[in-house]
Length: 219
Image (cartoon, rainbow, N blue to C red):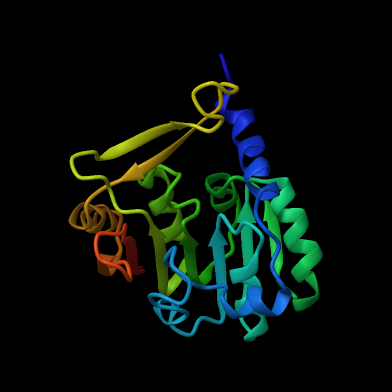
């Protein structure tokens, strides 16, 4: 049987190795886009004007770097050592910090707090919200914001969703994602102490295309 604890970082390493490198200026200019459609949807504004920010599932670190370039004390955490090494090499000169760790373990093991914690199609989608959300709440400054984006739920398919990372004829590696309707995400956030909660589906730029679920909440 495959071991999900040890295989998940390898899965994300393979994902990271398949990401096409961008020109640094282009990467910064397009970094903090919450939807899967370039130039569509909100940009930096859901985060407010934080002095410090942490990204959960930072990948190659473009969004962290974009915030750092604006004077934010920005950090990211990612389970993939390949992604973290790339991010440190590409963006370390901006003062951005990148940590190689599981998001839950990182949050549980730190006493630091941030003005904003966010996830762009990242760890907030791939982690049980019953475990992650209380940790995020505890690590936010008073009035701090939590923002995340992911795919909306397939109608009628809610809760934990499993997928084989290597395909049906590949090595037995699996990851989990969580999917709910916006109202249920809101109930979960409120239940873990968040306020000013809003979760919605940002429509795609073309009709009948997959939208983006975006959630915002404050401590």
